[in-house]
Image (cartoon, rainbow, N blue to C red):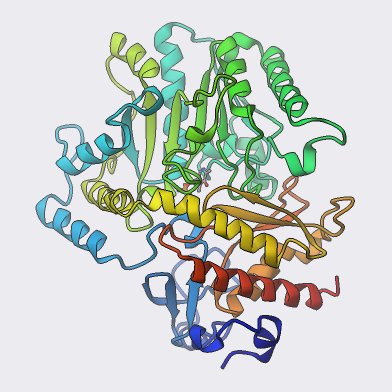
Length: 486
Ligand SMILES: *Cc1c(COP(=O)(O)O)cnc(C)c1O
């Protein structure tokens, strides 16, 4: 059933391993019978694939063809699909307490999940607040940070500084922090006015010729400092950044010393340092929190004042995200009103918490964070071996099981590929047709130009599976380059 080109381009991929390959036809039967769906899909014109079952690393489509999930959706499905232990724990919680309101009640599952995350106060983080999505978590973090200063009497602090090419969500607050040009275009004039953006730490495109890593970091810190000066250093609530960049920029890792330098600028001006680890946190980069690998000059970890988590926290088995709070913030509220002035109907939802707890217990027991580190090195090696020498592969970057490949027209100039080709999405579609799902990005460099794909497989992935994934991806790359005559 596999097209001959797959066999030709990747001689060692056993085509029968993949079974019937998915393609645009794989859900046609379903859409023929249901031509006008009531569900508002992401596109009114294109119908998505219909997933009928999912197990382990594979998703089965309507016509029986299978997809290897090498990105867990958007780096979500950290245990793969259909884990019976998680399903059992979810079912048990539903039977015990399916819902109670946090105004009057708590549940042991939400208490235990919070304990698991901050029970030993990593980096001074001592409290967890659970919500339903990453966007909600970032909105909540913004409110918490504002309340912190309000209670301290620094009510003039109303401004947030985030980074260009950051992604923090789709609600008005989190989208105001984000800087994804195409996504926010229609809303630009109604977003929060009190947010500004500085450069990301994006070494491949933006470190200057002849500039050392240390000089680059110093330049970025100076830029942040200048932004504080511009808006008035005493007016800033917080600087917000993804510890390792996610969907919009494609797994950009910070230069050594970057996070320490940025935090020092924040603290110098009395502002808070907020890290968004919704995509990169919970083990994906090879440590439970990505900031645990960021060090200052003395070798100490650079921990945040507030951190947000999401995606991998529940592994996709339940919608859950978290605001994680440092002692420093809690102490001010404790001496003040004694409450976080915020709340949601579904906060700390018992079922979501029990599900996430089961997911995280498996991660601990099976030492899957260690596997992210180990298999991440394998993934990097394979990407360099199969794609590293290719004409349009500009950069391969990331950490742990969180890697991106950035594509360019020309490796010398790092000029992006003609944006109208939408190379990343075309490659993603081609790869999917060959049976492997990866996560595409467009506008990598500035929101308009640049293309990348992200590989973020389940933490349970092994070497053979990674090899299969990368070989198929390489075949898809070759086919996409040919298709566009690049
Ligand atoms: C996905 C993501 C969000 C938004 O989370 P949602 O659950 O989609 O609202 C925020 N920040 C980062 C870094 C993300 O990757």
